[in-house]
Figure 1 (cartoon, rainbow, N blue to C red):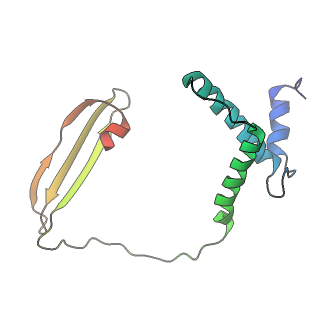
Figure 2 (tube, rainbow, N blue to C red):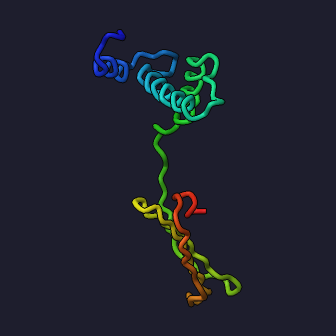
Figure 3 (tube, helix red, strand yellow):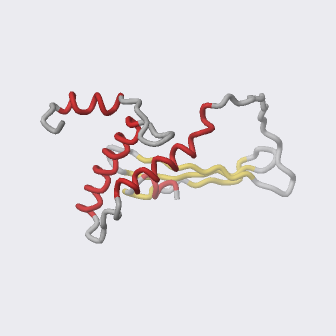
Length: 141
């Protein structure tokens, strides 16, 4: 089996519907095994304290079973209801603050900004600081 070309090896394993447990098809288990091999390889390279779990096959099978349990209800039809949303004016003692952030992926520049309005929608103030270089996470914080 290991002398096959990668396409001849991947395709049969990713299309095999044979169950390896009472609920887990081979193609799901195989795909997750490949993902864990890649993930653990990266963990070994970038985290010197990382150790592959003992019993990796059982670890992966439990992971797949947890995923199957979590996604079990996704095939069921849902009773969809229409819910109309609308803006309601603020109470007199409230102000509305809208904030957002943005990042330029090419440059790494991040900025944030916000505006405050009263219940009559009058502008009370705003801000737009340049935060320098950073990540998407930093600008959203």
